Length: 295
Image (tube, rainbow, N blue to C red; front, side, top):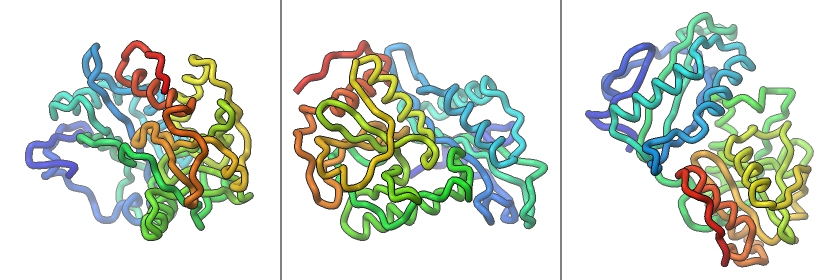
């Protein structure tokens, strides 16, 4: 699904066949989840293959390393150049890109002295599909921000996400929606959350959620389209009175939610400002002139 005998990836200064790449079984990342990664997309645009917000993603990768004491010396410019080369060698335009910083062998619980960088890419559609989602409130919470660096995209954090998504799918839903330690709405396992009421968008504040680059892009689009929004804590009970909701993330892009715990939203998706955001986001990543999208 992710590679074949012709796929090339970058690893520690060399471009290798993915099928021939190796790692050490005693690494801290494998044993303890001590590593960081990014999820990035590239798109075919009128101006050629473009990585969407590469700078922002790689700045976050470097920041994640700093937050969890992983030494990492690559510059953002180097990372961008390496990534475009991976895309070129694999003849990819519309692709999902996965940079991974992983640690050397170390069975202790101490900071690493040496780390590794891998960058791979593959063709991947929308992570959550292209249909409106049936979502349930998860029994799992996002971690207490005093227990981990929630703003860092750390490998081990995603066990929490896997548990939440698995629970949702086992119940017959498409995805879960997690709360924070104070029972406020937090985010999806791999995406941020927005909801809409009377033409205004609402989204949870930073502090208990990943500072999503797509989330920031949605807020930029709100400013560009004169769509009002408010960043504040939201309680689950408020969702029943909302007109619409959506998830957003690099993998998920912008995807509408049909219902939460089988409570359907009041408005038709095509009549919402959320739909305008969804269409405007596609225009932005494909570098098209932003159109006026109406029902």
